[in-house]
Amino acid sequence: MAWTRRKKYKYKGYTKIETDAQKKIKRILEKAAVALISLLILFAAFISAGENLGWSTPTWNDIYCAVGISERPPISGDAKNAATKIHFIDVGQADSTLIEQNGHFALIDAGIDDSASNGEGALTSYLDAAGVKTIDVLVITHPHFDHIGAVPAVLEKYDVKQIVIADASKAPPYKGSTFSRVLSMIISLKIPCDTAEAGSEYAVGDGVLKVLFAGVKITDDSYNEISVVTKFTASGISYLSCGDAEADEIKALMAEKIDLKAKVYKAAHHGSSASNTYDFLKKIKPQYAIVSCGLNNAFGHPQPRAVQAFEDINAKMLRTDKQGSIVVYVDENGRLATAETRKI
Image (cartoon, rainbow, N blue to C red; front, top):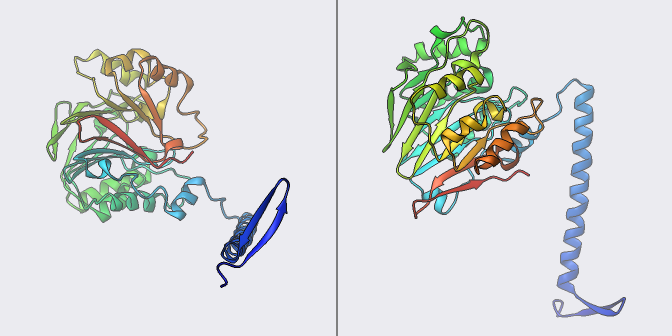
């Protein structure tokens, strides 16, 4: 019979016996290797031709999106069944965090990396895969594109019940076209919108999202300093988000009599040193510190002094540029755990 016919091959010191089945598998693998090499050559030729025609070279984010890796929440098993999850979505050198509690959702920022051709689609694909249809609260921490670039897509696709937006009275008028579009959409869609105010609280399932701080007054274009600072609490978890707050806002925040302690902390301003000082982190005492940043970004995020500060307070640092999208959740024993897409 064909499946049992054998042929002997002599190798150094031992004999290899190869069946017809093994030979068929070998031929299949050889054909697959040829196909893969051909595909790589075609891909290289396509990139070369694209550059000659003025097309931009695809980023890693484009490639991940093209093959559907970063669009899917990295959750299964315990994570999938957990009542409370915080999704740190890989959006490159940008920011977007999804809070999930018993089927209810809050979204803090909906930014995209301006170098990503399919940024909006990647973010909304992730939200779709996470089961989002209604967003109870959307927080816009400040008007920079890397935090609001996909807000129009979110407003168009999902039922957003409430928006909390940075206090515009603390800053000169912001002239960005995307932010202007966002404001127009909020008005046309008649979505309730609150200016961020310290002490305001919003229900997210059985959890509470509280505004702790609403930025400091600025006279120039340092809009990072009006970032909305929020804290989410639910059974077994607390999460602090500071947007892109920089040195002045961090100092003002520390001067307030506010309980900043949180088990999970998203590093302010993508892990910049000025925003993540040792003294500030000591007040938070996080178990996990998550950095949302792009691979090989031009700013060096997370910056070395911030990384050292995380180590000094014994926080476990995770990065979207290396781990991909990250989910922190409460497991069945009430302990925090993580799931990652793992890019590098």
